[in-house]
Length: 203
Picture 1 (cartoon, rainbow, N blue to C red):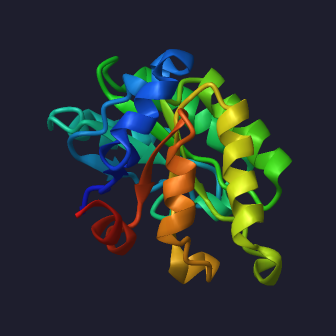
Picture 2: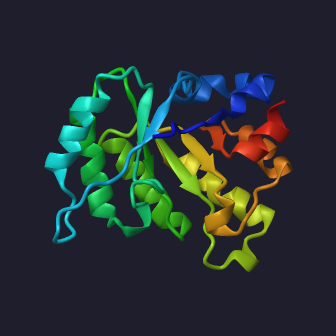
């Protein structure tokens, strides 16, 4: 299984982030070095999440020195999980893994309010960070300003650090380097998951 590769935005604009460090100690101490596993979500025949199978998987995964896990992402059937299921998974997984492991929850929703609400709730039940894609249903209206406002609103409301997920094949929206740099000035936006953009922005 391939690990999740996340580029730290702080590597690009360390001076700017240091100016904000006092306002976001959680984000500044959020260490993303290492391998993160984007876990699949096991299901029962009736479509319910199979927590027995999930526990069995974690018994094996916890023997490997992963830095952490991502739940409710693309591999984890994120679009097909109800908000309640996502939160229940975060809560149960938090109890299955070591305290030293980071747990990142996919909290993408199509509205800013729902994304803020789900991100905050995920942090409250055990997520150390959240992974958020661009809203894309009305992609033709998603200007750089509206996308910036969306992610900043999530970062403002969420007590856990936010990782921007530039998932172009799904969203049809490619976040520019300029808007990512602008987002990186926010103390609670700590990284971007996007191989190509990361290479352009950080080399």
